[in-house]
Length: 280
Image 1: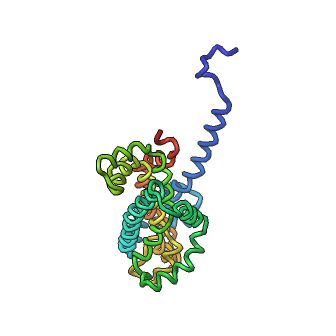
Image 2: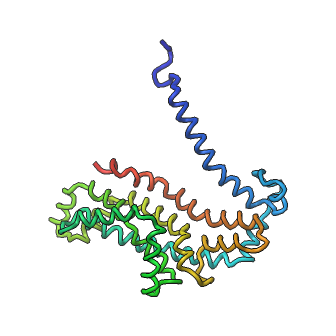
Image 3: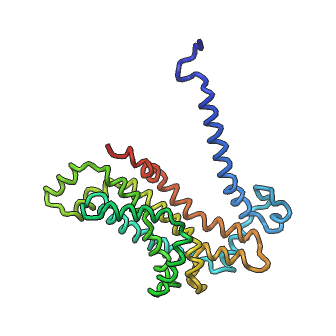
């Protein structure tokens, strides 16, 4: 038998898991490092050595060119407006709907919830066909609201918060109602403070989805002054005499906000995903 303590013994399973996770991390992180390196690489050097990761002579030329040649700041403002609208509307609608499905008792509640749940399995691209005609009839094409309102109608946020709400002890709600709280008071004084991890996870999901939304924006936005960053990136890619350094720089600038939001709220999303064990 080994003389090492139990906690210090060599475990091949731990080594295998560590190697697997390390390899997966490198595999996922390598494209990001490559993108950052190419952003600061002159165009001539990119064409000569595409496989090189780090530039020989780092430069800000690509970033400056993107900001000067293209209306990148306008695209950024449009994406920020769409994302902010999606965050506000989705959070409010999801909170109200989740509370109604988790705590209120009304006829057909479970059936309606199953219909919402079933709609999650319909691809976004299929929904875009009837959605286009609805948006056209309501005059929402070529508007920011026409982008973030369909995002807010997606049932993912409602489902996430509902699963959290149903685990909150009934005694807390009963005590709040005995103290005179109505449904809105119970929701915003009891449920919302206890559901911050789930709300944080929802915010991250909505931000990343709205910030990177491409398919529906491509269909519904035709005016150049209304374009968002993903559509602007497509415009750069379709330009004549494209310079790959500009493409890399614009991709990095688009990625930075999502990365910052995720890193700042990563603990929230981890706790929000672990809903089943969050409340005992």
